[in-house]
Length: 158
Image (tube, rainbow, N blue to C red; front, side):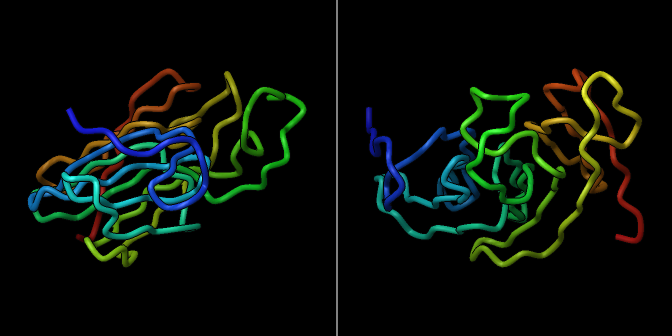
């Protein structure tokens, strides 16, 4: 068994790692949520890259072509929201994001979706999207934890 990292904000440190995924070359992508970054490692634990302040990452999907899809929200402040005093980030998030990056961390696509109102979510709203998957046509399937549902988003003009 191999392990690395501990609580912190520096390289090879994590604050609430939320998801991990591997591309076709064996690189590991770790959603370091509270540090608002994605850290990229080889399987031996060597840090290869760090993509910072592009989004608060919650979940991954990597396509066969090594497109790295991430769901999350725009970076937020560290001020707790009065409705969520236990939350380590400013809550609730102001939006929900789907972001596609290449293996170098260059943003290829960005979708901003409305953050649903708790217990009043409408179709197309997401409320703490934490999971995503893409089918062979590029449609996005997303699961949100507060909305308690999965939705399909059809990509047009691909």
